[in-house]
Structures are given as structure tokens and as C-alpha cells.
Length: 336
Image (cartoon, rainbow, N blue to C red):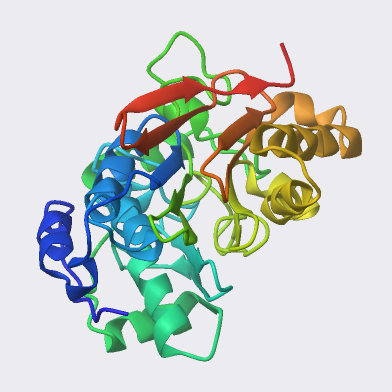
């Protein structure tokens, strides 16, 4: 694996992609594809495509893609501009996985702008899978990642406004109404963004995935969702396919959602069928509660076929391949 240096802005991703020896490969043969959650996945996909189109690895591609929303100052649910917990701390979660089952993840990581790259270091430099909290920060600093203040003035102002009427009881998707610009604040409105999950298949047939988030706005300090939990927010099986999720992480964890999607594909379901069954299982387990939640699954199989399904209207996913690099498709959904 190439030895990366931490860099501070999304624009530096292009330099890294161009200069890394791992990407000095044959041009793409057209098999490669990358998919990601939400419409801001388009920019993530395009960064990943810079790797894949040069014959690079799916693992390099998903890391490069995930770094883009992490650095996007407009995105309040991923990366350094994420909204804080109810105590004013911005904490980030991320995971990364390749086709061989190699895994790295971090949870409740503060002061580091690119948790996805720390997660990859966990995978490559340690015997562990998941580092959390102060230990994850210590490891990141030892690996040369710069310590930064992640609470932006805009996020701080939104937090202080929330404090005026704050209720201690967590409310699912409470962050949605704080940054929805659309006509409604329903979970999954096209202007509401959540976790970035990104899956890639390269020309060599290798699958990889990454997931990154700042978690639910105004969460209890220390809360961790599904994103860094392998099998919940992300799962990859090189013989079958890969899956990721977005939405209320607690419900994904309860159902080990991404692992479920991949296992359903192993049993013969298409990516679309597998995502639909995983969502329906959430409904069967909690039929009343699921009416007010948003969970969406996205899957990619070994053939490059993709599918998505969600509880509510509004979930979209982005797909990028040799024919089109900016495709955004509305997901089908369970509730009308």
C-alpha cells in the first residue's frame, strides 16, 4: 500500500492521486464503477474516478472519494464542518474495508479533519480494527495528522441556537430540520445529507468501501452510530459485493444492515432486492418507530450492478462509470 501523507484540503487529493506510485497503472478497461450515498456523492465519486480511470485500486479510490465531503465546509453531517454533540464537541466516525476483509475504523475521533485516512492507517499500521476517542486521537497524531479545531463558527452558532430550546431526550434525525433548505424537514429531503457511504469496483475486480460521518447532530457525547461498525454501516465481501447505509445508525446496527445486504446477495438476490429486504426487516422489527425514521441501503455486486432502497422518500445515490460520471438516481422507498 502507498504511504500517504496527511493533507489539509480536498484539492490536494488530485495531487495525491497523480503522484502515488500505486496509481501508475494501465488505463481503465471500462469495468470500474463507483457508487455513493446522496447527491454530494457526485463529487466524491469523481475523486474516486480519478483513481479508477487510471487503473488504480478500489481501496485508494474510496479513500480519495471519502475525503471530499470530509473537507466540504457546506456539509454539516460529514467531516470538519459537522454539527457538534449537545456539549459542543465535534466527533467523527469512519471505516474502510477491502475485498480481502482488511478493516480499519475510528469512532468518536475529535480534532482530526480526515477520519477516513486515519481509519486506513488503523487497517495498515495496527493489529486492531477499531480505535476510539482519545486513543484514536493519540494514534492519529502519532501518524502525523494535524490537530485542528473542528467546530466552525457556523456550526457553533447553530449549536447555540439549538441550546435555547434543547431537550435532552435524543430525537432521531433532529439534525434534518436544522439544515434543510427545502419545503419540508422530513428525513431524506433532497437538501438533507447524512453519512457518506462509497463503494467501488476496480478493473481488477477488487471491491472496497468506505463510510464517514460526523454523526447525528446534538447527539449525546460519546454516541457512535453505524458508520464505523463493520457489518452495520459498511461491509465488503470480495466474492459477492459490498453494501453501505445512511440514516439513523441505531436501526442499522440493530439489524447488522450492510452485512445482511451482502449475505442476501450471496444467496442470489440482486443489489436492489437485497436492499429492499434489509429495509423491510427494519419495518418488521419496529413497524411504528420506523415510520418516523430514515434508513437507506446502497449495494454494489461483483458484476458492477448497483441498487438502493430506503424507508422514506428522498434518499438518492450517485453512480459513476466509464459512460457517465455524475448520475444521481432517486432511491425507491417503503413508505409512500
